Length: 101
Image 1 (cartoon, rainbow, N blue to C red):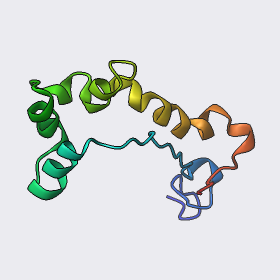
Image 2: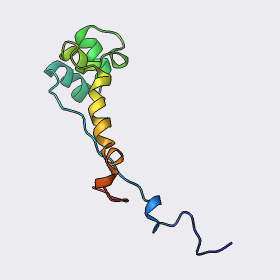
Image 3: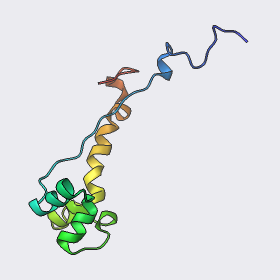
Image 4: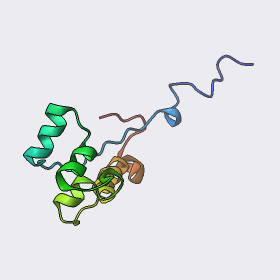
């Protein structure tokens, strides 16, 4: 066993992490929904169900779905953030190994 031959050596560029960062869009919640979440400790999905008379919305279109009349689903809402977080892997030619924002 050679102490100088360490496969997990932090100085090896191939072992350094590359970080990705993505973010979803933001939108205003209706005051009635905000009140339940902020002042009454209710989860957003439960507040959505109560205000919009829905059931288990957090497993469906989500609040963003009902507020956009279905133009943006809960799943679609996260698609852009995930893709943007993957940019360093999609274009490794412009991100050095170990790059951290």
